[in-house]
Amino acid sequence: MKTVLVSGGAGYIGSHVTVELIQSGYDVVVADNFSNCDRTCFNGVEKILDRKLPLEEIDFCDSKAADRLFATHKIDAVIHFAAFKAVGESVADPLKYYGNNLESFVNVIGAARKHGCSNILFSSSATVYGETDKLPVTEQSERQPATSPYGNTKQICEDILRDCVKAYEGIHGIALRYFNPIGAHPSALIGELPRGVPANLVPYITQTAIGKRECLSIFGNDYPTPDGTCLRDYIDIVDLARAHVAAVTRMVDSKMKADYEIFNVGTGKPVSVMELVTTFEKVNNLKLNYRIAPRRAVDVTAIWADTAVANSELGWKATRTLEETLASAWAWEKRLAGKE
Ligand code: UDP
Picture (cartoon, helix red, strand yellow):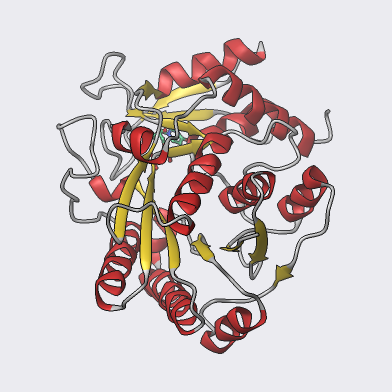
């Protein structure tokens, strides 16, 4: 049995990936320093799987701790999620982001290499594509200069991985570029748990629907899109998690076609903010309080994925409908509020 280290494994994406890995026959070591999440999702994972999981409470900025972890467990592949992710905060405090996001990744790769773990998967983002009118974006589309330190850390970490794979014999790397992950596990035992006021659309919608926020602001309806609101590629969190299982399997089974590979993880379908709001209302049979607000700085007009490479190479495809995903997001919010 192969063991996967999931750094940041107690967070939103990491917890869903842990579930899918275990259900696909992998062993998982979860590592998290709980700096940006509590134990809700980790407990939820154990409940879904009905078993205890090894949990290492470490900060990967501590290189000695990273080294100890790899010395303690025999790790076949590592998926690196542990990072700060708030775009606005990264603009206000870039050193926090460069310090944490880059150092932790350098330490993970260093410890993996030292202890003979050859397979490294990095959680990247469609943010690296920036604003482009050549849509959908393929993995070959040019990256644009980042508009925030957060986005820049994603680009730099991709480059770190690419360079390490090139320099160090035996190291393989995959970067998965996520589009907009949304929704929750069908059990409603794990999901997104933003701290403070949500910056992302779907948690803002669910918190408005439950009454925690008064009104959703739709940032701009004068974009050059069919209904004037921005277009994004919203990918279900369980589908996204399964892409990680496919990528890890490709690495550990030595099926990679190059030592460093990149895959888009999206649905390939653009959805507007307004469509998302009306679908949420319809599927959950409620009315959402919203208003049109000015555009938000640095939002791109439209972005969605060309998923052909991920579909053919990973043998993976998004399967859940937007309706199912938005129903799961609402079920999770209600459960958090103790209403279900
Ligand atoms: N959005 C919005 N109101 C919000 C949050 C987001 O209208 O309270 C819009 C945002 O302008 C973008 C889309 O929803 O067009 C997705 O934003 P999110 O922050 O979730 O993801 P992004 O694509 O910016 O990473």
